[in-house]
Length: 180
Image: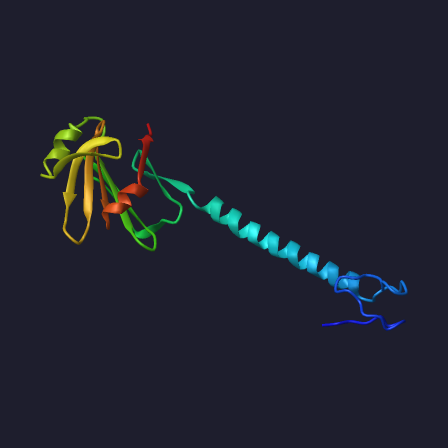
């Protein structure tokens, strides 16, 4: 859009603040430039906020505890409120909890014999899985076909079973430590 000086009628350059012919100040040019700068600053701020929140939220984890063993899961997993079991019959204590996100379900169970101790590797081996090493532990992999799969291993006097809806969900689990 071509603009002309309101005083002398000379053609103005697109970004001119003053008329090159007579020196008259061009009205509203500061507001237009300020609005462009303000819009650009807001756009950059929004882009930075989106990028930084994506970086911040990606890779965030949560620490969860099943009985006296801690695990780390991605923060997008939500605890299933109806999937928390604790059984204790005086000899054996068994606890399990479940979490899910949009893609997967993870259930972690811990069984132990308080005080008496158990041979956790021997108990894990009775499930007839395939001997394997996962998550930094030697244990047994169980494949339930299209339904799910599990990894069972011994941890001191506990037997830990990690049940996942998809094999790739094992990548979402990190065994942190046993809590005394």
